[in-house]
Every structure is written in C-alpha cells, then in structure tokens.
Image (cartoon, rainbow, N blue to C red; front, side, top):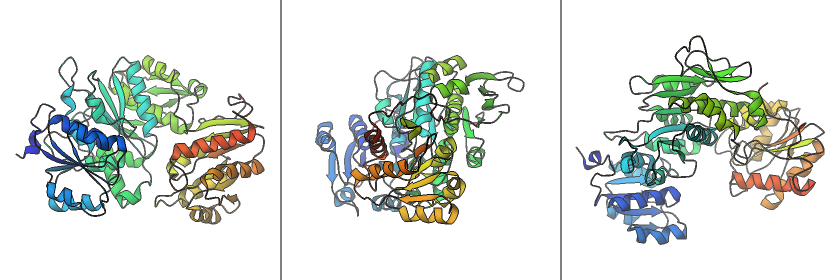
Amino acid sequence: MSRLDELTSWHADWKGLRVAVLGLSVTGFAVADTLAELGADVLVVSQSAEKEYERLLPVIGARAAIGPIDTVPDELADFAPEVIVASPGFAPQHPVIAWAIERGIPLWGDIELAWRVRDKVVRPDGTPADWVLITGTNGKTTTTRLTATMLVAGGLRAAPVGNIGTPVLDAVRDPAGFDVLVVELSSHQLWYLGRQAGPEPVSPHAAVCLNLADDHLEWHGSFDEYRAAKAHVYDNTRIACVYNKADAATREMVEDADVVEGARAIGFDLGVPGPSDFGVVDGILVDRAFLDDRRNSALELATLDDLAAAGLAAPHIVANILAASALARSLGVSPAAIRDALSGFRLDPHRIEVVAVSGGITWVDDSKATNPHAAASSLAAYPGAVWVVGGLLKGVDISGLVAGRGAQVKAAIVIGADRTDVVAAFARHAPNVRVFEVEHDETERVMTRVVELAVGVAEDGDVVLLAPAAASFDQFASYADRGRRFAAAVRERFGTGGENDNDADSPRPGLA
C-alpha cells in the first residue's frame, strides 16, 4: 500500500508529504491552506497570483513559485512532488499536467482532497456530512442553490459549495459543521475526480447530471471526453442517481455508472412522471419516487402558478426545480419544506432577469447563457424575441442553435469576436431573419449600440433577450459584467428601471 492510500482522513499522518499545488486562485489557496494545516510540505506553482494570496503563503507555511509555466518550472521538477493537486483551470494538455501523467505522479483535484479530509468536523453520530453532487452543461448553480435552500428549509445544515464559488475545503474545515454539502462540479473538476484511484473514492448520497451539450471542447479536446468527464458525477452514488428523462445522454450515464448496490435511478422532466420519477401533472409539480404507493399516487410539491409569481416558471428553471426536489427528497425533506423554500427563492442576477419594461418592450438579461444549450432554453422561454447573441464561442459550433431556434426570432443583434460564425449561421439556416452586427470593439460602446439597434426593430409586446450563447471574455470582464452593461445601457436609454420593472402585462416565461 502506498502512503497516499493511507491518507483517507483528516487525522491521518500527512506530515512531510510533498505536495505541489497548481494555481493560486480561491481554490488553489484553499488547497494550500488545508495541506499546510495538515503538516504537508507545500509548493504552490502558478502563472500569477493575487497579492493577498501570495503574501499569505509564507504565513501559512507554504512556498511559492510564481511565474511562467509554459514549461515545467525547475522549482517543481526539483521539488519531486509525491502528489499534485491542480486547480480546475489546468487542462489535460497543459505542459505540467502532461509531465505529471508521463511520470506517473498522482493527480488530484480539490474535490479528491476534500473527500479524504471530510471527517475533520463530524455530526453528532460521528459521521461526516453527506455529499450531493450536481453537474450539467447548464443549470448547475441554480440547482445547487435550490437544493441547499430546500435542505435548509427541511431542517438540515447544508451549504452550496464547489464550482458555485465557495471551495469544498472551506466548508469541510468550518468548525460549525454541516449535515449535507451540495457540491456543484464543473467538467474540469470531474475530469480530475475521474482519475482518483484511492481506496475510498468519492461516494455521494445523491448525484445529478442535469443535461449535456457541447461546451468546453477546447479544454477537453472532444465532446466524447467532455461527456466522459460529466459521467463521473454518478460514480459510487449510494442512494439516488437523478437524471433528465428529456436528455438521453444523462440516462445512459446512469445506466453505465458503477454505483453502490441499491442506488435508485430517479428521472425528471416536464411531462407526466412514471413511478420513481418527478414531473408535472395538470400544472402541478409532483414526486412519484419517494412515497410508498408511488405506482398509484403522487405528492404535490408546487404549482406552476406559484412558480410564475416568483419568476421561476421558465421551462428550464422548472426542470432545475424538479431535479433539486428529487435530491432534497432523497434526504428526507418534506414536500411542505420544498414549497416553503420555493416561496422565497429568487434567481441570481443575469439569469432570465427582467431589467426593464418600457414602451411595451421587455428587456431580459440572460448573460449567464454562455453556450448554445443555455441560450436555447432562453429562446424557448421567450420565442419571437429580438435576440442579442455572440461572444467567444469556445470552439462550439452555433449552427445547430441557429437552425433550431434562429428562424423563430424577430431579429438578431450579433456581438463579439466570433461574429462571422454567427452571421454565417443565420445566412445558412435562418436567411429571412434580420441580422445586425455590432462592430464596436470598445467595451463601453457595445451595449449602447445593442440598445440602439434593438429600439429600431422591437415593438410593443416584444422581448429583447440577451442570451449570447458564448463566453464573454472577448469584450467583457465576465458574463456578469456583460449583463450589467446591458442593463445599464437599457436604463440609460429609458431612465432608471424603465417605466415599470414589474409590469403585470410584460411577457413572462413559462411552460406552454
């Protein structure tokens, strides 16, 4: 047995273990801080670092090698790490990752490390917190927040962690402790998780892959590799493998998964559910999985009317709610607690957010729609919209989205570095749609011009929808920056807040 095989507890002997930590962002620092606390010998290797993190490294007892890593730094080679813990941004083809693989150096992500030390703080019965894993091309963050909110409403101490922003290691080390950690996982984190070879692999209480579509192909190298990474979310699941009945790929992942004996497959979609499923019947969201007489009855969770009143009735949001409900119910949360959680839940900014209503035109910011799959959901919620689209396509072909949804839009306003590909897709698949290009490269002018063009084509009753289907980093600091600038340009044109941000007659997304 190797030394790493023995390191499956916070209370194991980590002292002196040589660990290289790749990356010094919030995740990298959490890894370094944890390992230093455990007594490991820590070298942090990063292209760059925030000054505060760099300043704190020697304080916690870690060393740093900050600088170019286009090749393997001498400091890393000389350090001869026994294990490397990589931040999610390090792709499989990165020179340091390739070097580690070639030399057989074990590669972990922060999730692997967090699972090994999850027993630092335990529950009254002496066991560590349960984990619920959530991934998917789209909807991860919303579903993670929904699930954590439902669990808390059900009386459990729960926290949303992982790719959502708070490192899992920070939650594991929280002295207050938790009953459940709801872990959002990116495909990057899952790629590293799929490499785990320890004696006690990550084994979640429940897991879900919400959906699957082209994304991050430049990181993984192919769609097959991206799919394979996502499928690891179900590995060793103990109780509930939740999948999307409307997405065959997620069902196939569950069918192929190596799970703990007795784990159940729980489906969800917007149709009438079968036994062991979640779905919608006559405008009511129902559970037919976690009740004794599931073949003949169902439990009511919420109504579409209630969700519409809370701005949660867009079809893809309803699907997220069903997935979250399945995860929460697998942990014993009552339908009443789920209803209570939904009554106060609101979406994060930049997710189908109505930013203004003026002159009968509704302006919707869904800047978080950073890939075609997410944008398709937005367009389904607002058919016939004036569509603001484009940005950095990340190697993804947008033609399928334009062919499937583009012909229904009233007009397209194309922004971003990859405008040529978007315009060409419209010419080929939706030639009758009016297409406008925004050629401004200056960030300050892009959304001002978008609003000018939209005003020229939108009419009373129309929706102008920012759902770019692309990343933002070609012109903006982030998807949030892109959304804020869109909202600011709208409000500058019409006055703060438009005529009425909550106009009862404004279009609302919902199930047809």
